Amino acid sequence: MFYSGDDSFKGLRDLAGRLEAEPGLELFVSYLRHRENGLRKQAFRSLSQFISTAIAWDFDRRRDFADRLCLLQHELPDVSNLVPHPLHHDLVLPTLREWATREPNNPIPFRWQGSDEDLRRAVALDSNEWIA
Image 1 (cartoon, helix red, strand yellow):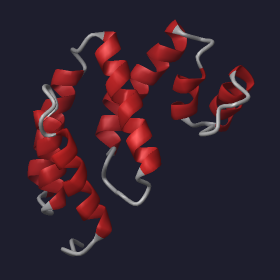
Image 2 (cartoon, helix red, strand yellow):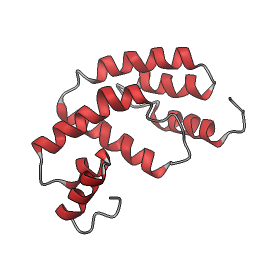
Image 3 (cartoon, rainbow, N blue to C red):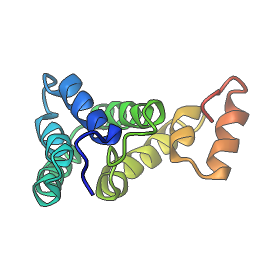
Image 4 (cartoon, rainbow, N blue to C red):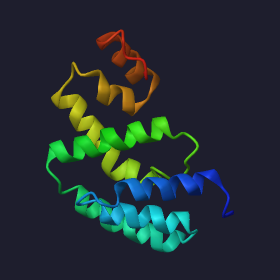
């Protein structure tokens, strides 16, 4: 249930404000704002449009977005709905898997994939991998 004082919704609002000026993220920002306002149907409509657009981005742009989004999720654990299932399943995870295939010695995509095996691999690749 939506409560106006809920920190997770405040977090969505704050994040939307931080991202709103960035080109290409307008539909993601729309998702965040609709979620913040408890408008689930409209939020997922914007999210679906965003995913359709973002999966067509070149690899570097998808990688940078996935990395940034995962870092935000790590830094803002109390913000729920930041990376909903469709976004994770359809854009973030496929991008992380492609990244891990392209750069098998880079710990970052393994860190964000997050299985126990992936986390162990990230640490094996870089013993200073503090997030993993």
